[in-house]
Each structure stands twice: as structure tokens, then as C-alpha cells.
Length: 78
Image (tube, rainbow, N blue to C red; front, top):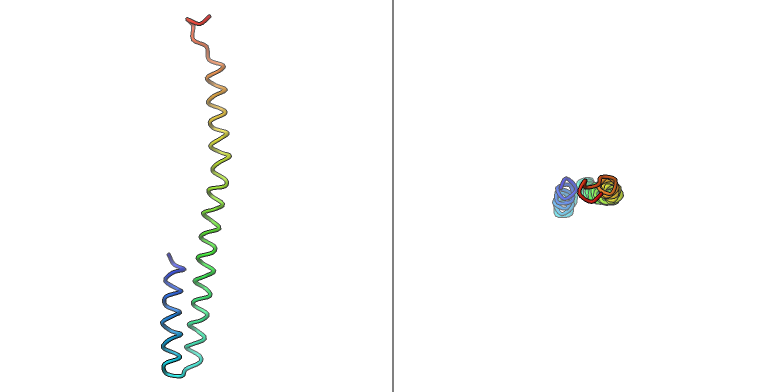
């Protein structure tokens, strides 16, 4: 979300800088947009890492529960 705000703010600055022929403001806008893209990429990477790490943990939990169930025997089955 923060990345999107930076991208929008940067675009506004860039357009305003072009409109008044202020290269400093225009370049500042481009920098803000780049910062926004980096933040978005970082958030995407973070989400993908969470997903990738949660799958093995879920599988391990399922395997543990299955093993526990196999070791427990119903007294009526014996």
C-alpha cells in the first residue's frame, strides 16, 4: 500500500514539474515513483516468502498429527 502512495505522489510531482518546467521537482517525482516500485516489490517478496515458508510448516503439522493418530489405538481395536 505504501508503495502505491509513493508511486502516485511521484507521478503528481513529475507532472507538476513538467508543467512548470522545474526539473528538480520532476526528478523528485521520478525518484518517488522508483521508491514506490521498490516498496511494492519488497512487499510482494515478503508475501511470497511467507507463503513458501508456511507450506512446509503445514505439511509437518499434518504429518505430526497423522503419526500421533497412528500411535494412538482404540482399545476396542485390540
